[in-house]
Length: 61
Image 1 (spheres, rainbow, N blue to C red):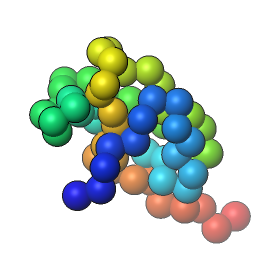
Image 2 (cartoon, rainbow, N blue to C red):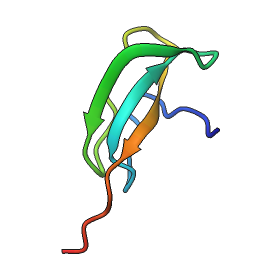
Image 3 (cartoon, helix red, strand yellow):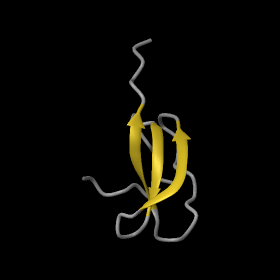
């Protein structure tokens, strides 16, 4: 499993639904939907991060 992304880190082309995780990997009941190339929102506590649950497909328009 990849390391969780930090708050404020850019999602790049990996936008989608993210779940908050604790510093030791424990899942928190907090989700965020973040579009591509946007920063991740702040977490509820310092030291937490975001892991992708569902990545949206890239559009070919």
